[in-house]
Image 1 (spheres, rainbow, N blue to C red):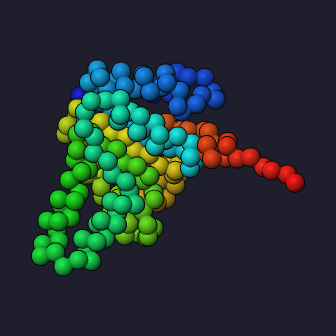
Image 2: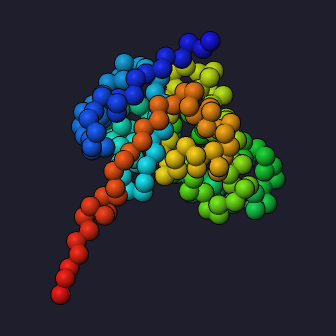
Image 3: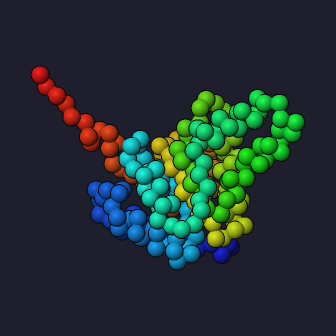
Length: 190
């Protein structure tokens, strides 16, 4: 049994219909970070519901340096390494992948790899497993992953093995709001 301390889901303390930008949520999460608690969240929900916004606010409220992996850019960098004439591609890829072993890590938009191929999904499955192994060995890590995928889509895209690992260490927070872009939609009638 690991010494990992599972924390309560802070979002469970708020009534239905909470807003993801509720300052109490941010305050609670930042307090957990300042207390030195392990911190692993998977924010899932539709496009535009505030997942990345909340993750960014958490990062800005702490004094520590976080590593950021924007999935689409990270994957394009990987593809550039693979298509380049690096003398030692495997060392370049290894160096590229070291971000997944950062003590503080935000992975933004998991599932947004382009092109969305089996090879891309296999690559990110491997990176998630790498992060899982790192968390298992290093109990002072903190991770935030944002995704538009729900649990069944994560299983379909990456595998049940990946979802099983996420469920072990991550508090899964489902954002049930609609896109802020739709909230601001105004229909003009002539």
